[in-house]
Length: 245
Image (cartoon, rainbow, N blue to C red):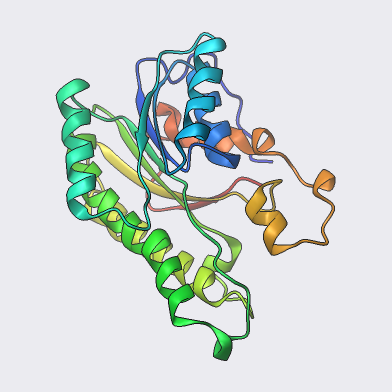
């Protein structure tokens, strides 16, 4: 695992937005960040799941989070701008954003990829990331030390057979991260990407149905890197793809 010693309350007084916060890695990041003192903005498409995470954070004594129900498949640029305007009016700035939500699509030979599947994967994994990041950056520039984190994959820097749409979308994610990092180098905003590796999630189970999930690290196991990139300890890290495992 990524070697980082998590310090108690290292995220105190930070406000962090997490997409895909209702399940898997996003849910665990929300719980972990809240335990370390952050106020969390939970973004996802399933209200029931977001409410469950909300309840867990409050029960464990964390600051009351905010819930933003939003389906990234159908959200428009104006939806993201309105969301950020609400954040700025109520909070003022944003210290961190973990853009974790993505979809797998279908694993198939390249010539069998359906246009509908391709478009759906690109909409959530690329277009929505672009629009959301574009809307978030002005609010993050108001923070003293802001961290924007994308989620990539091993198939995002080396293509893999049958993983067409997802693989290409993660190549695009890494490119998007690098462009933002280069534009905002030497500023208060840093931008990086995490490759979580093989982790015990529903997406992993869908991609590898024959795999024994109990042999995989849990989302909690890979949290050190997620905390590191949101903490001030990573202040000088910019434009990097980091591996949680």
